[in-house]
Image (cartoon, rainbow, N blue to C red; front, top):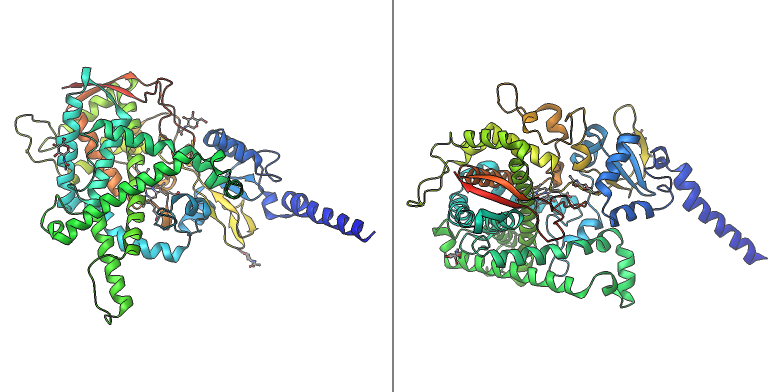
Length: 538
Ligand code: HEM
Ligand SMILES: *[C@@H]1O[C@H](CO)[C@@H](O)[C@H](O)[C@H]1NC(C)=O
Ligand SMILES: *[C@@H]1O[C@H](CO)[C@@H](O)[C@H](O)[C@H]1NC(C)=O
Ligand SMILES: *[C@@H]1O[C@H](CO)[C@@H](O)[C@H](O)[C@H]1NC(C)=O
C-alpha cells in the first residue's frame, strides 16, 4: 500500500516536473514554441540540428512567431537587438559547456574561445587584444612583410600559373588565410607555407574539416557521449580517427609554437619583422610578467617556459588559428563567388576600377616583385571594397549559427513592450547571424547580395544606424571576435591583390550551398569540388 502511494506520488511529481511546469507554469511557457513539442522535449531541435536544417528552421520560426521563440524545454532563440543581443551578449551572459567541452585543447587546457567564466576570460583577453587592434595592425612591420610575401609572392603566382587558369577557390583561400594567420601568430618564417604547397594545404584542410560533424555529440549530447564512452562504445558515435587527427593538429601547433619560442630565445624575433611572432610573443611576455608578479621576485627567474605555460600558450594559439583561418577563407570564397557570377559582372568591373585608383597600384609586376604595396589604410578606405566585404559577411556569414549563452537568475528578455520576465537561471539562449541578417526592415530583400545597401547615393560608405546594430558577423560584447580587424584587413588586401590583376568568372559552382551549422563552409559538389574559378590576367 505504502509502495503504491509512493509510486503514485513519484508519478505526480514527474508529471509536474516534466509536463505541467515547463508547459504551463515556467515563464518560458509565455514564449511561443517553434514546434508543438518544444516545451516538452528537446528532441525536435536536436533532430533539426542533426539533419543540418537549423538556420532555415529557426529563421522561419522567428518570421512566424516573432523575436522570441522557444526551441526546447530549456532553450530559447532571440532575434532582436534591444532585449535580445544587447541583453545577452553585450550584457555578458556566460558561455556554457557547449564551448568548453568542444574547444579546449591538449587534454582540457582552456583558451579564450572555450573559457566559461567571465573574469578568467577577460583577464586573458586583456593580455592579447591589443595585437589585434586596427592601429596595431596597420602599423605592424610584420604584417606588411606577411601581406607582401603571402599575397604577392605566393598567392598571385599560384593564380597566374594555375593550369588552364582554373582554381579551386576554397582550397586556395584556406591556404592563404592559414598562411597569413599563422605568420601573424608565430612569425612569417615559422608559420605555414600552404599557398606554395597546395597539396599539403589541401590535406590539412581536409583533415581539419573532416572532424567537424562529430562535434554534434560533444556539444549537443555530451551526456549521451559520456555514457557511450563509459560503456566503451564511444567509437560508435565518434570514430577513433577523429581523435587521432585532432592530436596531429595539436602536435603541428606545438611545432609552430616551439619554432616561435626558438626565435624569441635566439633574439631573432626582436631583430627581424619576418621572424617576429606577434601574437605568440605578446602572450608569452604577459605570461612571464604574471609569473614574476606571482613569485614576487623571491625565486630565481628563469626565462624558459614551464611545461604548463607552454601548453597554455599553445592552446590559445591553436584557438586563434582555428578561429581565424576557416572563417576568413569561407568569407573570401563566397565573396569570389558573388563577384564572379554573371549578374554581378558590373560590380566586378566597378570594383576593379576602384582598386586601380590605389597608389601605388596593387599590380603584379613579374619583373620587379618588390614594388611597394598600397598602404593598409588606403585599402581600408575604399568604399565599394568595404561594401562588398560587408555584404558578403552579412549574406554569407561564416558563423551564421546560434552562439549559445546561459541565462543568469531572473532574466528579462524580449523587445520593449513584449518582454518576458523571470526567466530562471541556466536556460540556454541563442542568437544567430543568419536570422539577424535577414530582417527585411533593416536589409530590404535580404536574400540578395547587394553591396550598394552599404553605400550612400554619392558612393560613400553608409554603414551606421540600424544596419550596424543588426550586423552580427563577428558577434558582439565581451566575447566578440578578437580578430575582426585582422580578418577585414586580410580579406580586403586579398581582394585588392586578386581583382587588381585578374578577371574572374565561374567554371563550376555546384558546391556552393552552405553547410547548415554553426560554421557554414560550402557543402561541396558530389564530385568534391567547391568553387572552380576561371582567372584571366588583365
Ligand atoms: C571573417 C572572419 C571571421 C569571422 C566571421 C569571425 C567570427 C567570430 C565570431 C562570430 C565569434 C564569436 C563566436 C561565439 O561566441 O560563438 C568569434 C570569436 C573569436 N574569433 Fe573570430 N572571426 C573571424 C576571424 C578571426 C580571426 C582572423 C581571428 C584571429 C586570428 C579570430 C579569433 C577569434 C577568437 C580568439 C574568438 C574568441 C573570442 C572570445 O571568446 O573572447 N577570428 N569570431
Ligand atoms: C615556402 O615554399 C617555397 C617553395 O617551396 C620556398 O621557396 C619558400 O622558401 C618557403 N618559405 C618559407 C618561409 O618557408
Ligand atoms: C526580477 O527582476 C524584476 C525586474 O527585472 C524585479 O522587479 C524583480 O523584483 C526580480 N525578482 C527577483 C525574485 O529578484
Ligand atoms: C542555410 O541552410 C540551408 C539548408 O538548411 C542551406 O541551403 C543554406 O545555404 C544555408 N544558408 C546559409 C547562409 O548558411
